[in-house]
Amino acid sequence: MQQEHQQWGAEALWQDLEPLMPGLSIEVLARVESTNAALIDRVRREERGRSDGRPYGRRQHDLHPCLLVAEHQTHGRGRQGRSWHSTAGASLTFSLSLPLESADWSGLSLVVGAAIAEGLDPSGERLRLKWPNDLWLDDRKLGGILIETVPAGSQRMAVIGVGLNISDDARVPDSQLTTGFAALNEFIPGVTPPQALTRLAPTLVTALSAFSTEGFAAWRERFARRDLLLGRPVTAGTLEGVADGVNERGELLVRTPQGIQVVSGGEVSVRLAGPVQE
Image 1: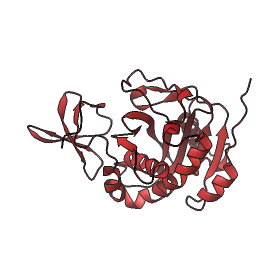
Image 2 (image 1 turned 180 degrees about the horizontal axis):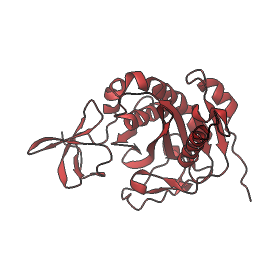
Image 3 (image 1 turned 120 degrees about the vertical axis):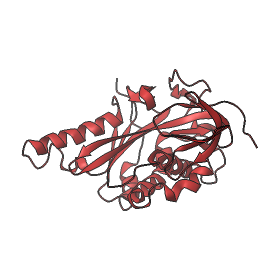
Image 4 (image 1 turned 45 degrees about the horizontal axis):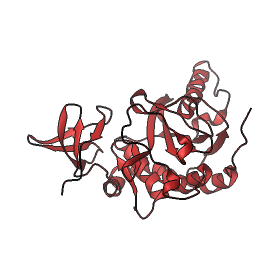
């Protein structure tokens, strides 16, 4: 039986966001395996249509920005192949695809995380960012970000997937998560997935619209103010040390007895190893 749709106010949200990202469309699906996979498949179908001699595939606007929301996601993916399932009404799962003509994509996941955190917690009270792509509420994981890219003609499409726990019913399974999980309604009582999206989307869309020209530099200090790892002992594979912020490319800096070591995104899974060091 199909569950009743939530009231997303997609038209009103589109009216707010489209001036910030011209050409944007917004779609809400009751159920999908993965919002990232769905958008990537659209781009690939579009490219196949071009190679067959047709100017466009099934939908002319598939290479335009698209915000795809799923009320229930059955086979969502997190970093390093982990599962991210969502429950209707208890989670917010969406992907945003857009063409990016950036010469340097470094730090994109940090910009996305910082923009979402600012949209949900403008004062910086409790939302923190755990390098490279997790949002935390206090000392528990609230959500994650998965960024994938796919060729689109002479440029590339970025597909940015976001999953957030909204209520305690989210029950996000993650065999790698040992610190428990948080829900946004602990911080914003009574918040619903549509309300959370309305809060975070303008900041996120604005940040992404400017990323091609501004890159990570415009967000480095804003990320630093929410950096969960800063000053804390961490392990990164076999590397152990104290997190010392990020560099201009968004790479993690780890202070060790041998000096500062640089950890690039995608290389390792970084874990907290103790309390903050003053």
